[in-house]
Amino acid sequence: MEKKRYSNWWFLALNGIIAILFGLLVLLYTQETIKTLVFYFGVVILLTGLALLGTAIINLKKEKKTGMLLFESIVTVAIGIIIMFFPQNSLEFFMILIGVWAVILGIVQLIILINVKGEFAGKNIFLFNGLLTLAMGVILFFDPYSVADFLIKVIGVFSLLFGCILIYLSFVLHRLKGTSQQP
Image 1 (cartoon, rainbow, N blue to C red):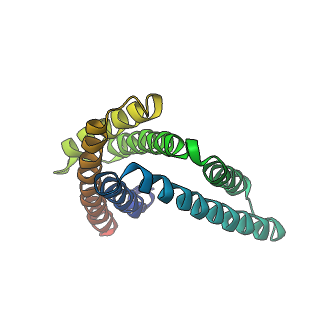
Image 2: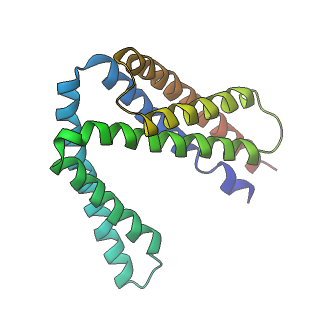
């Protein structure tokens, strides 16, 4: 059980990279450029969903459990199609999607924080980042367009900060994984 707790450190690192890329996107590009990029993001999401669907079908043929993978693939394909075929609303949808992602990520961070045994140096940073990510997600999810341009730039800066913190915390968890495996 101890090994499982720290084995997904890479998940935080990957989300940290996504947060940094999102922050750079918001800070460096105009809204029209972002709309174009969001369309291509929809294409990538659609292709990812189709790849997941193919994997789910292969697993079904091998009689493996695929319920969650099948569900995830269908949702991913649907999200990709929505982004591609409704470009006028895709940016708003993209911001809501980022909001949902941030809420889920904030909750995951808080769950990880609760499940980590003992004290470690980044515990308060982990708590702060989890709560801040959760708050950012709620703001983006419920009110994506009334957020002023200034607030979007602030979110970009915070996203860069969150990404760096997530990458740092992923390495902390990776280090904890290494120490938990030692006798």
